[in-house]
Image (cartoon, rainbow, N blue to C red; front, side):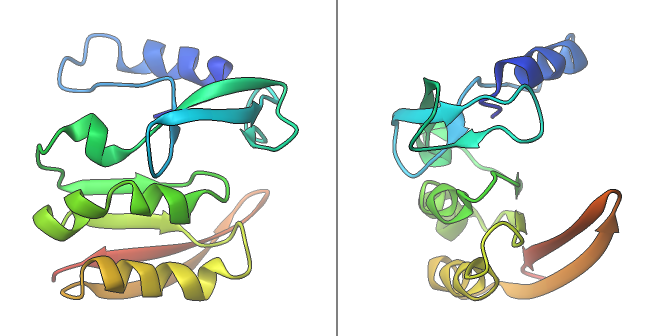
Length: 145
């Protein structure tokens, strides 16, 4: 899922011809709805109360319609909590490996691991802080192994 139109065009070009990949011009969210979106032509685009347009929000559970997922990776610019709730059935039923950004909001460092544990207590949780030029990245990893 990629809500930014410019990034979505790049994504579509990248996956062209890869039949096993489905892409959606939408934001990851807890329910299917319309969300205010601030498009900044790339990396700084995000959901915003003062968005210049609206974008479709989709839940992972609704997109998958009960199908299995083996890996869920999300860096959704501060909407990780909502996106995880939108994947709660998939997470609890199929135990996909998770890679979730923890660095957008201070409270995410504590709230997101607790939420993932609540959704699936079988997971082992790991946090990794990595340098990422020009800044850094901190991620939560969840796996059964």
